Amino acid sequence: MKGLLIVGHGSEKSHYAKVMEIHKERIENMGIFDEVGICYVARNRKPTPDEAVKRMKSDVIYVVPILISKGIHFTEDLPAFFNFKPEQREGEFGGKRIVICDPIGEDRFVTLAIVNAVFKLLG
Image (cartoon, rainbow, N blue to C red; front, top):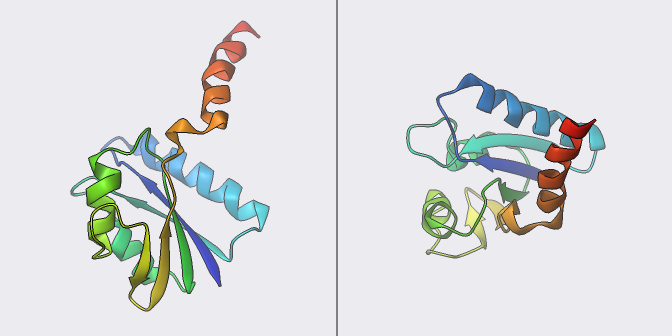
């Protein structure tokens, strides 16, 4: 089984979790992955990446950080949840293969989303 774990920064605002759920549902509807999970990398936000992985049944889990760049949350905090070395992108955790993907910030589709925000206002 292959799973996807979407990693957000985390926020106390309830709308943040709702947006994460929207992305989760859209990806689930694509039928690409056997399961899709959500977690948060910021302190005191639940579930944490390690907690989310433990709940998942997939033997390979692709971890996609919804972060703008390769900052501390990506290079240090996220790997630490899986007992990886800083900047380690792949390994075993809880008997599962974990693959940490690059943050989405530099993706061309993010660029298009920025421009689209203006186009939506222009009607």
